View 1 (cartoon, rainbow, N blue to C red):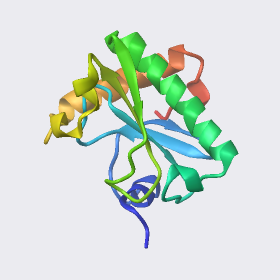
View 2: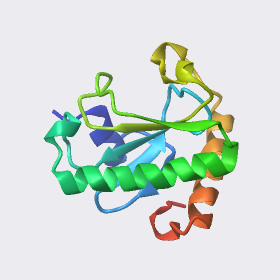
View 3: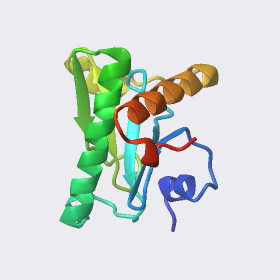
Length: 141
């Protein structure tokens, strides 16, 4: 059975994509821990990160690094968080988000809802920062 992420990747469900390549996509979280909270997701349906082929895991880390640099460029947080939890959806995904302190890593603090216009602005800002960072070919329009 396809996961919600597989359905998003297939275009069956909407998402605000900021990255798309042959192996992975990245899109904004619907329950963000902060502005620009992005999920980096492999196109291959893999449940846990330990099940991923090492080259795929390395690619996800490379994409997360680029997204993290874009988050720093746009919001200038004290830190950019990186987290692999995997309990929400049984499809490997890496959370990349701005972090002011350790509370930023607590999903109890995630937004229950977000303003769509604000999310559109965040996605646009991340796309612009990714393009400026040399990733033009992987940033969707």
